[in-house]
Length: 275
Image 1 (cartoon, rainbow, N blue to C red):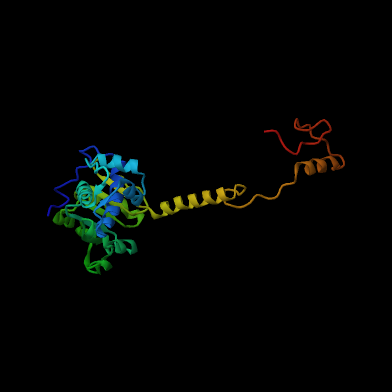
Image 2: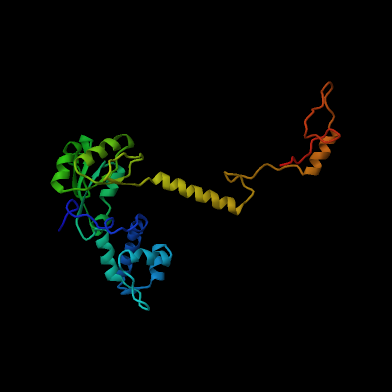
């Protein structure tokens, strides 16, 4: 079986837009679920709904693959699974190294979805000598001193960084120098890479902050009078009451009236200021 180092997916050379490439895994996941249920064909509307996009966008995306379906029948599920898998490079074996075997790195190593989607965890690497030799998901952890040799021996072109933020850039530079050209970054930092190296960042805290924004917006829509934090403003006096109170106020002894231009002819300040 071919390895990732010698075979690259053809999406860029075929001119498929990045937005379409980002949606292909969504289509593949939906199609795989249909295939597992032995569904032979699917309409663009059904598949679009399952993938969470509109049908017009789906048909446009599939036109880049040269797949237009059959009128009145729809798309052949098995053929689309193969076609999208081939376009994404998933008909090949992609050896992957995971650097940083803390809680997150260990969880990634134990994720069963890698193998079923064309990815093989070739090595687990960590800088902690206490972890060296320890088995995680059936794979012995190796020390970072061996990083370059591991990448070369396994023909690795995809690296996963799950280290603390402070170590991520140095690890990234070593991966790139050793021949890794695609990096999935879980560290909470932005990596600097040379041209020709692709980085995908996964930041759970950012995703949660985006969800918090939407929750706050929904709360404000349900209660338009709420403040930015969802709290209600303090009760205000009706304008008539405020104006009457202002008229009845007696200035303190020796106090001078303000010459504010916002005062009325009798010296009182309007309760509602002009915009």
